[in-house]
Length: 182
Image (cartoon, rainbow, N blue to C red; front, side, top):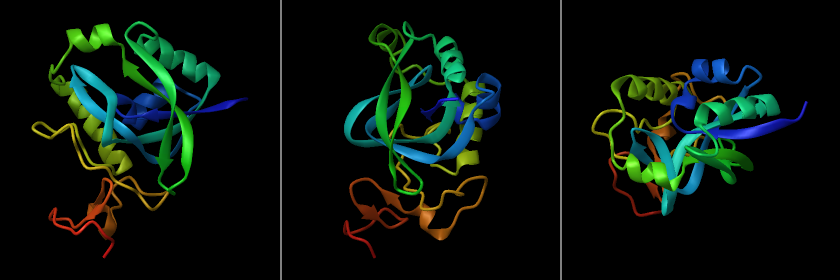
């Protein structure tokens, strides 16, 4: 069976929900999509944004799972998809499918907040994967990106280096930093 890589950043971060939608799916690792930014448009969306990045999860899925996701995401009318380069938790660049909202729906849902239940599902997924949580009320869409050095990094295991944020340079946990490793 051909396996396909898929980058999740919204409610599909939630492993239980993802398994219901994509029964053949397998978890790979936390991952980062550079050059894009998370947007709050009633549902999670991303858009190109140089210098920004989106934290998410990398799954291995079957063609049947991809067809299921197409139906769930309303492809190609509501969300469209494309292959992008993501960085997995081992620092390896990989090509994966990602969904993002089509322009007509971006305009209709511009800056509409996430419903509470949706926010909770996404937050649980972010916590599961151990990535910065952009789904808490009042959190910025520009949540710092996390480069997770360990493929097993998730489910509450948070080594000291996870408080570092990397977004074109390294910073200390308090936000200070000279832009170099220390």
